[in-house]
Image (cartoon, rainbow, N blue to C red; front, side, top):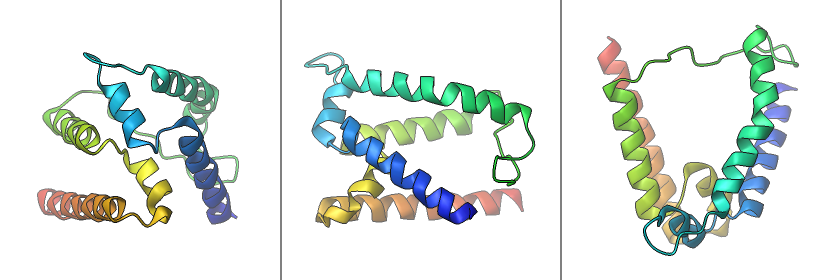
Length: 139
């Protein structure tokens, strides 16, 4: 049941990304072009996402289990450090260069375009390298 629920949640999330224009690199790059032809419409999408997530997130903070009985796993770290800032910079630079965020990249992977396939392969390689370096750091 948990996997089926996760599948449908991901499906709805992907559909939302597609409908919002987050899977359109030109729209994303126009949003990031604050000094030029800025398109603020994605700010409304982000604001809407924050508003929708506000009540469930507050509920999740007060409970140890999800509605389906899974253990609640929320981040507990609150301070900024070099790893968080560095990771944010790498993520933002990649997003700005490609105009694609990882969520929409997975959603538009089904188009079969070679550019998105290369992006997803690079993203998976980066995730693997991070995991390898992280496990090395903690041992």
